[in-house]
Amino acid sequence: MSSDALKALLQWGASFGVIVPEELKFLYTDLKGIICVCEKDIDNPSIKIPPEIVISRNLPMKFFGLSESTKNINGWLKLFFAKIKFDRDNDTIVDNVRVNDKFKPYLDALPSRLNSPLVWNPSELKRLSSTNIGNSIHEKFEGIFKEWFELVSSSDMFDLERVADDVQTFHNLDELTYEALYEKILKITELQRPTIWYSFPAFLWSHLIFISRAFPEYVLNRNCPDNSIVLLPIVDLLNHDYRSKVKWYPENGWFCYEKIGTASQSRELSNNYGGKGNEELLSGYGFVLEDNIFDSVALKVKLPLDVVSTILETEPSLKLPLLSDYTTYAFENKDCVQQEKKATRSATDYINGVTYFINIQNEQCLEPLLDLFTYLSKAEEEDLHDLRARLQGIQMLRNALQSKLNSITGPPATDDSYAIDPYRVYCADVYTKGQKQILKEALTRLKKLEKTMLSENKHQLLTMSKILKNDPAFAETELPSLFSNEDGEEVIFESTYDLLILWILLKTKKNSYPTKYEWVGQRYTNFKQTAYISDDAKAFHTAYFEKQDDVDLAEVDHAIQFVVDNSFTRTSSTTEETILVRK
Ligand SMILES: C[S@@+](CC[C@H](N)C(=O)[O-])C[C@H]1O[C@@H](n2cnc3c(N)ncnc32)[C@H](O)[C@@H]1O
Image (cartoon, rainbow, N blue to C red; front, top):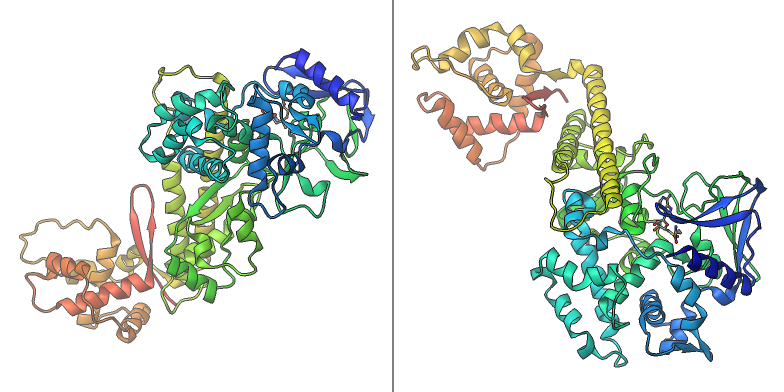
């Protein structure tokens, strides 16, 4: 994109009557592409676009002869847009107008380089390999490819022989290396050199243009199909700033953008693409914001579908969000629409997992996650408010967040197979750093919450160190008696879990619970166990009671089940501590 193309675009806009206040100047910059700057202070500046230059579904509907009921009109619009960009041999005529000529100044002024990771080269993409974006790129790519294939195979207007290579790539996608895919497809998209307008590289380019600059049609037309999108030349030159207060409204068929308040001299006039984190900004728009208060980490929790069904039926207070509950793109894919329209949700809506977003600015964002992990940790007779289940839930969530944090590794050792664009490295670094920061902050909050709960409920908690302090007989005589044959060899317990089980077994056998811990004995006597003897019980019995005949396997199993149901295990980087909880 050059300054000349920008000048031509603005003249073209003016010829259609586009209204831009004279205080606004559009400039070409290396870092942000085109930007709009105010030359003087201006109150409530607005930009207005006439209907003649809106690129909407009307064009592909007329050109391809589609009806209102045609599926995926947004897909046809992307295909149409690829045609007016890449079909150099034939005009695209709608209502006797050569649409390719009409929109040429707009097409020429579109960015010459798109920075969505969907077209990063293999060395660049490695910078994202351990992140959500890196992990989901294949799936996203497959989705776009499938959309293209369904469109081009739905009509005999497309000669599939001419795009046979792309069709073959689509069918063999899982077998291809990323390097091969880059060479076959992405490079062509990146360099904007497709030779056939309905090839996949052409469609992918069009898709990237739409996800980085489309607007929802409903602003102009309340009766449009759900998620219908349009391109709005010139308004789409405004960059994103989440602080910018703006409104979009229709006026006699025109699209109007207005900044609310004063736009100051020498400052950039921005649009507001919505509260998006860096993951969404980078995936869709190819940029990141360093100080993004909307930055978030998406945590996908995969649950067996029968568990989801039970939650939907019996735990209405648990929030199971779908991606469509969060997405703020101008358009979403059709699966999201279907999910959104359903009055009630079913387990199959969660086939890809339940996605939660963690955002540091939102104090409450961990609560729905914590409720879910408490639910997953609770025993059948417990409810979501039980202290033990809650503490175990915190632990489980901490472990999940910690392992997500650990999985985000640093940048790979230098890889010079492909030239690396420093701007893309910068984007990858800001995004990755933000993900780690959010996870660390969430872990700190959970630790703090756990500490508060432990201190507020300490009278209900029984740790091994309390037992050793208040029940000296256990450590001095009862426990050593178990190992009397072992010639004074020191026995080391790696966790307090085994010790607690042994304590309960010995105290019950010898009927020697200290008065203050008699509640454990009572609960233990009333505790019902299942008939099945676990492998854990067998291993435990072999380890401690092989040479003793006064504690049998069923007793060991009973004690293990009791401890599992009545304790939670605190894990730190160096230790694991099992703590009994009085219910
Ligand atoms: C709707 S267009 C805005 C106009 C664009 N600058 C151009 O040259 O055409 C969206 C694209 O602008 C860029 N962009 C928007 N906001 C930005 C920001 N705050 N920082 C950096 N780049 C931004 C990104 O490349 C994004 O994909």
